[in-house]
Image (cartoon, rainbow, N blue to C red; front, side, top):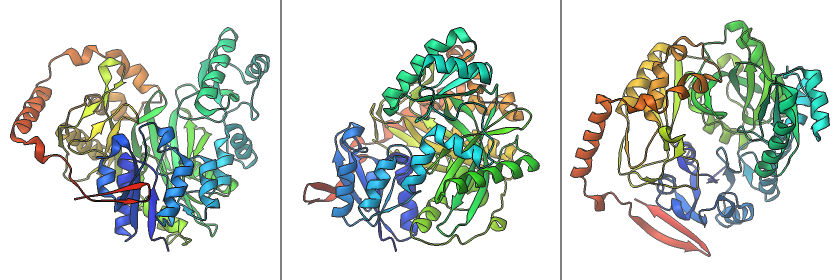
Length: 498
């Protein structure tokens, strides 16, 4: 039995895990850095402990401090959320060595799938299609040139130990390769401490399709259908949906079966995601495995009715999956968009400040996963995602209509957000008819920035008038959170909020 979970994350994902723990009657404890002392996750948890200063290396990424705290507060388990330490095999091994349950896969599977070339080799030997290319790191420019000649241009150089778009370069001809190789290697070294890269064929205008899998310790492997994740900028997803409009039943059977093969190949346990690229002929290729909970997991939950965080905790507790593949069905359609504190007109620069007005949308089919509230400080230290807006409908058309309506109702003041750009995407013809690919934002949206937003917008004017009225009615002193029961456990400061 797990009685207390230490959540080593922040923002909306920490709040999401807290809610699951509360429904399961499990105590939740969180960590926070100095800028996050008034954050929503700190106020929502049963216990909250200061872990360090703003720098992530001294707080959310400080492995010895986290393990020490977990032992001191008698946490049975640790949930990493996503990002930070969620796919850090050394951290997972430290948790395992400390005798604490890690809510996620074992360190061996994470280590194996985190090395992209090793993962590609394993997938190829297990019958999972991979993008043609090298399965060993390419160490020199000469070796890269020879490999590219065999693969055929255009090619993509990728960091072997990386992800998130870092250490990646497109190369369209031999003349571009030396410079691209050096830049990719240098970026990989800075981002991951490993300059190894590999080369694969560049798939032109593909779809980004991923499959949610879940597995227990008893050898049961299931899929929870696919997600469409092609609307992305700088290799970071912006809008996701489930199921994919581009995947027919025959392709769905093939791609989900391949995902199960991939999970079995690395003896995976818990929730994970297999990512694929799919071309216009519906041929798909293994891209990578995310050995953690995904940001976009809510769309899968909305169409299947399965709570992935609860299932993660149950599996980590040693329970067998309580459902079979035949029990997993999809109902309707779900679309999610990520609301960021960023200035779209200023090259998507992060926006900082204090949330002085926040009114969430509601209504049929709408779910908000948020990490903000009134008076939340948005700093420069962490990811600028504020919340996720998820809409479910009986079909894709209804889900999109509901999401558009929700975004028109969503009010945030104090920072600049990307809400207006999300609303534009949802009205674009290529998004509506499903013909978009991973280059959609680059080709369709970016040419309109910032000219499109210089034009007057009566809806936007009404929004700011309503914000001003709301602010005039508020007494700011009443908006500040009041900590109570401030106690200390040795050097750990514990806060409880009401």
